[in-house]
Length: 269
Image 1 (tube, rainbow, N blue to C red):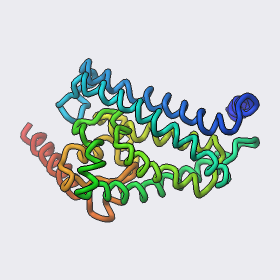
Image 2: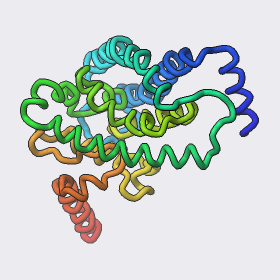
Image 3: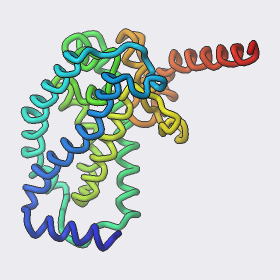
Image 4: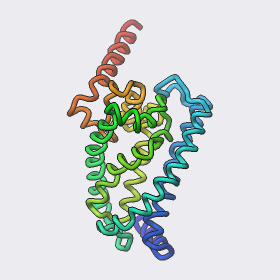
C-alpha cells in the first residue's frame, strides 16, 4: 500500500507543478469528495430511501435542492477556487511541501488530530459569534435557510461566512506547514465529516454511535431546527466545547426526554 501511494505521488509531482497540485488539485479533490458524498442524500430524500433513519419527516422540494446546488457551484468557483489560488504563496511560506519523502502515518495522524482539536475550538467561537443578532440576520441566516439539512447544505453559506469559518479549517495547517498529502487527507476527512453532520439521517452505523464526544447528524440537525437565539450545538466535529460551556443543554434535555419516553413505551409493551 505504501509503495502504491508513493509511486502515485511520484507520478503527480513529476507531471504537475506545486502550484497546480496545491491549488487546482486541491480544488478538484474537494469538489469530487464533496459532491460524491453529498449527492446521494438528495437521491435518498427524493426517492424515500432509508426513510426510517431520517431525523426529520419533512423533505426539501426539488427546487430547493437545485437552488442549493446552483449556489454551491457559484460559491465554489467564485470564492473557494480564487482563495485556494491566492493562498498558495502563504502556505508555501508556512512550510507546505509536496516533495518526497512522504510523511509517515504517525506524523500525518498526529497533525490531523491537532487540526481537529484546533478546528473545533476556533469553529465553536466563530459559529457562536455568527449567532449574534446582527451577524445571524445579515450573514449566517443564509446557511439556516435549510431547517431540514441535507449533505450538500453543509457548504451552503454566505460568502463572508465561507471565508470566516474557513479560517478554522486552515488554521492548523497554516501553523504546522504540512506536506500536501497531509493537507489533502485533512480536507477529505473534514469534508466527509461536515457532509455527514448535515445529511439529515442517523444510521445505526453513524460514527456518533461509537465515538465519544462525536457530534454527527443528530447533534447538528437539532441546531438547524431551532431559532438562532435558542439553538446551541455550535460545535464542529467533536462536542466538548458545547459541553464545557453548556450550550448543548437543550439538546441533552431533549435526548433524555426521548430516552425516558422510549423506556416508558417499552415497559407498557
